[in-house]
Image (cartoon, rainbow, N blue to C red; front, side):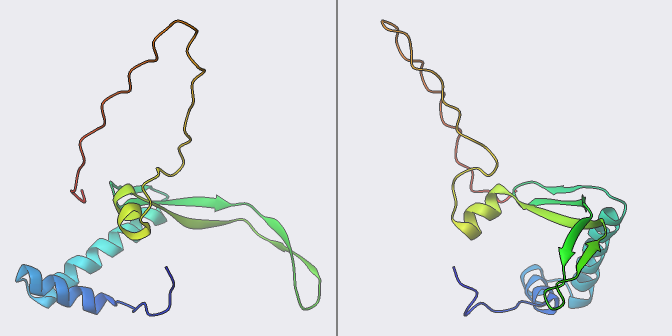
Length: 134
């Protein structure tokens, strides 16, 4: 999917949508949304990990110091270590946004073929499908 044709949705637009759908005033919705964002920032500032099941995980990681090169002068420079915020996409978001059904970070484990004269093991039953975003 390309970024062309995508629109930017602002916090104000989200506030308007949520207020309309919930019947709450825009002032109340804006306050709640801002408090939510402030709490996320505060937790990350303390180095905590935030996990929103099916949505994703925010966490702070240290990026190691490294050597870089100024492309204009070709001078070598040291980039210091720093903290960065990482976001790992959750299953529901990945499926709905990326259209990807394969689990991220998991490899398919294959077992050796069964010995001659033995029956192959039965596959476990598939888990029930869930349409819930939570």
